[in-house]
Length: 283
Image 1: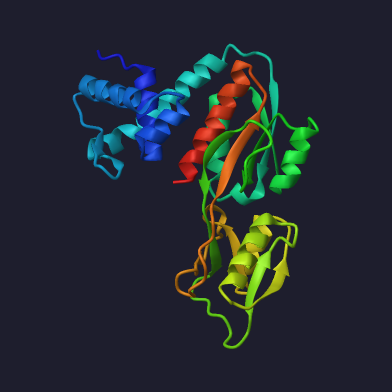
Image 2: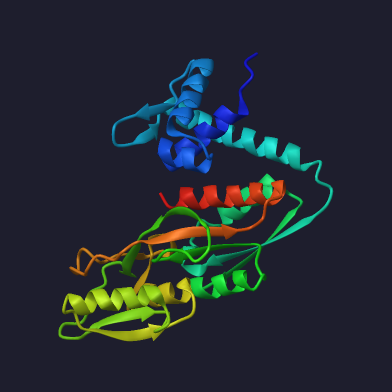
């Protein structure tokens, strides 16, 4: 009977989900060469080629795709077994920028629950500025926010978040009318960057809808009322990126950064699961 090494299986799962040895190495706090070595060891042990490697990308082979779900279940079972000795419930309060909350949230919560069933996760969504203020005030154990400039805390950069001009599928602006926008108001840094780009491109615009949170801003776009400037991950069903078709200016990315001063094993494990889930969703 073959006995699989959990570290190599975890390296495989992360590499498959992130489509990159480099990103998997970052998630594991390791090196690209070490992750590649683990994957070759696993493939040799199984006698199967799990990943197809090209200069531009890493993708699953047919056999790798068959193995992936079982590998995920193995890792989850291991985490549950370790957590079974944790008899004390632990509360972890995490603030997340609502610009990062998309349709993948239920899957992310499931992964967090599987990693430690006795860990109670409390998520608070809000604007990045609001979340950072709450973190500074000691109201949050961790904060996952977007930022365009250098952080004022030492945080862990997870990925770059791409933004787009989101509108209802097939939507067209009215001829001769300024571009209607759905935003979170003048205090939103993403809105500020978008209107600055429009002004530089000489494109007239008007604020047609103002709402609190990506869900409300996206709802106005889905209804055909305006174009929302939002992260692609949070775009609602029935919408698409209209930037190219309408010749709108390119929007800059922002860094997604995780802040936390927690060092206990359970909290760090949960935050690592959270970070891995968001890295996966960013692909």
